[in-house]
Image (cartoon, rainbow, N blue to C red; front, top):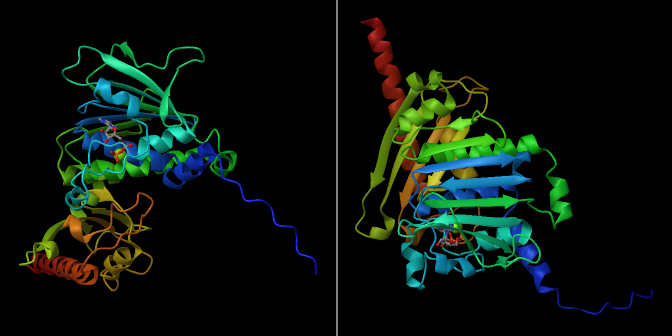
Length: 359
Ligand code: ADP
Ligand code: MG
């Protein structure tokens, strides 16, 4: 046996490394949108308008009325590890914002054409800037890359075009634009329920009627009704469960909206926010679904929205943006407490219904 001659080890080009790293953070249009939404919410926006072309692959634009970005910050905006949200290591454990790693915009600039129009309240005009590979770039070849003053509203509009234009394998894996659009709407729907005071709209470019449209200043219940249909309302229960311990790190609180025994969906709808960040946990989902065994007929599923607040020190939610499945301190006992509360409330409601009927 004659093994092949070893190939020389070479250092990858910087731009290739960045492109690979960006693909780890931005998986598809919906994951880019999630980052952009969180930035808008971090900026205190009360209105977020999204426009999408070809499932977000051709274009995705997010317009917010948040605090805007200072002109002097524009040159480093899309550099990796530039952020206004974290400055010391200690900050990491008290984070209240979604972002902190300063990687989202940088990543987008490596795998898409990124442009920004932004205006702070104190600036007399807006500025427009284009980015490529983490740096300011000219809008057209030969032009200056300096951000240009322009007319614009208070807040920030971020546009990403031709997502994955330079990573063809990724692009070819995402050919179903209507599926990508459905994922975008799903992320927006969930954030709209978790942020009922913020107005969200989403439409396809060129369409005059939005596919998602929520007013500002709603309640959670109104938002759920608006987005998941009127019929859910009469079957929707809610409760709060919390625990205050001597050790602050172990205190937690939760708010749950969930359907009763009369509601039967084909598939479980499960929204999980931990410290206001949309995350996934198949363990928590399964535990909550189990509450409905014996309550719902076989094949029927509930609606569940759980917003859990734990001490930032006890959760790894923010550790890595791609870490979708989260873990936190006392996860099992917290989940059990919440399940018990649901069970109790569902039983209580069905008893009172029987009682009313008999009376
Ligand atoms: P991070 O959110 O982790 O800080 P990002 O790459 O998402 O990193 O954003 C970098 C910085 O750009 C943010 O810290 C923030 O200062 C600014 N920024 C991004 N989007 C917005 C926005 N919509 N409104 C105001 N500032 C923004
Ligand atoms: Mg961010």
